[in-house]
Image (cartoon, rainbow, N blue to C red; front, side, top):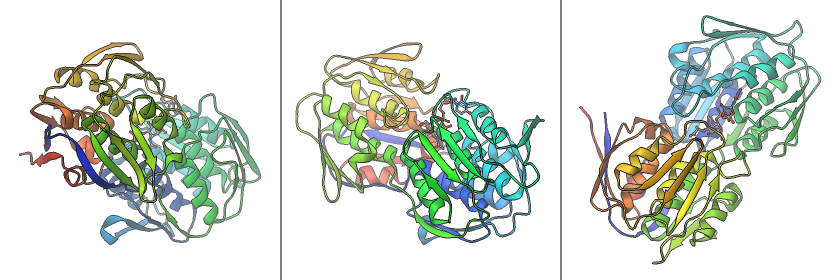
Length: 423
Ligand code: EPZ
């Protein structure tokens, strides 16, 4: 298994290009199952998760071609000849559940493996299933699979009240509702930019949708959807991650393509910590000149609150802040696996249930550490950039799921970082 070697090397300066969003692409790709006409995505990120979704769609009979070095995905599901999403693919990536709604809406039936466990939490899919049942689907859980059947005449519009603003359940319900008979209203819908991006793509395919980005989305079902070409929105989590690089090491970095509107709650915290963030024509410029970062308290929440996917990276910053910071993780029940690894680098972190108390130290020290999930892996790399000496992060296959060209992007702004090929 590959690992990444990082050596603390002082301030960073320059530009880092931000790719298209993994979490948008993973819901846009299944949208191709809703139509027999081609759907093309541009600005697609080059990640192992995108390859997994490609393999899943191809296993269902869709054609998916990766063009222009992987940044363009040309897809067509004219011949959906298999309605069975196999455990062998689904177990690799939970987002696979997002093929359920589109298949059920288009083909009237589907058999999809349940995703199984995850390092950061139990992550059930009950809200996805309840939403489809509200649209008239008959669902049976058998042998680890969801066996789903739409009523005669197809899914029906419904009022769906989510007890919690789940991103995935909103995406599945939204896609299914585009072909349902009548009107669907999703209440307490998730408001993430990835959902707005999905709605824009579906509308380009001919769907009738209003209210995306708010807590109430209304969808008027149509008989069929056409094709479209859609540009994937910028990855706000990759953006936030690289904004933290100069914050942790000092210097000035511009994240190309970054927009303030994607990361407002996050920028509020960087501001409170004493960092300068500026929106320019090129993107978001972050600078830290000299002064030590100040401690801040963070609570993760659904968008537009502070994103849980930036919690680990923010913790890496706060390890060397002046004072004590409290980070409360409210989305996932087990998302502090990076804390003991950061502690190996000399951080002072106490975890009690869903809250981590971080007492800032002068400087971290390099050490061998282990990645446990995607965002934890990059938080260890960020910590290593500012640590004294060498840090070796192992199990970086986690990283490849959500970050393209990390070594190239960070080296370009002066980081001392290299990938060590495993046996
Ligand atoms: C999406 O996951 C993202 N993944 C996650 O990013 C992100 O952390 C999460 O949203 C929250 O922002 C993708 O988009 C592919 P949820 P998702 O449904 O859809 C509970 C990353 O690092 N819940 O909003 O799975 C669930 O257990 C990943 O890129 C139910 O109880 O998130 C969790 O506690 C990690 N029942 C909470 O809701 C359900 O049916 C939020 O989950 C669905 C969710």
